[in-house]
Length: 195
Image (cartoon, rainbow, N blue to C red; front, side):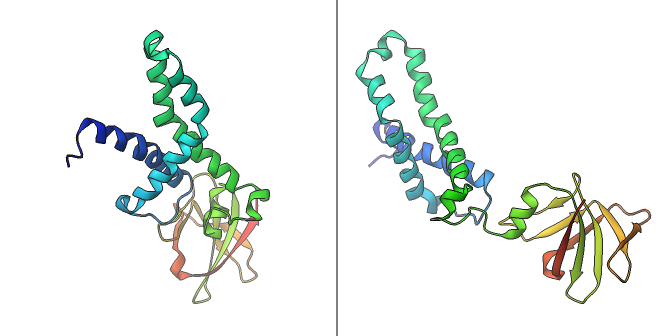
């Protein structure tokens, strides 16, 4: 059996590529635990089938007409949309639905960790980080700061490191500091304060 034969290659493209595109786009917009590509084959085929089920009426209409003969560029553009563009739209729509409150009554939020949920909003905060040894680090999390996201280990870069007094107040920005990076493994808890 030659998998590279034209008919088998066409089946592979038709039933793996759209689903694979949907899966990869969804991974980009909603990071999580990564699976090996070989383990995603069944999922890719399933998403491709969903893709075709949603587009069944337009596909039937295109195939029952003479668009292939009358307007081949339009015909190929339609299938380019079916194979490459609609899978992206499908992933975006699925992400949109999963983040809606009505949908979450029956399904979990797609973001697995509170860390990712809070920091993905890119809001600015004054932050007090209490380390496992009791030491407190303070700083400003703003547009030049960064928080890692799943599946990477949690790390936090605060663009400004501040001196914290005994009562937890922010005294002043540390001199000559370019910020501070904190590893989640060192953190006991984090206080987020509105700016």
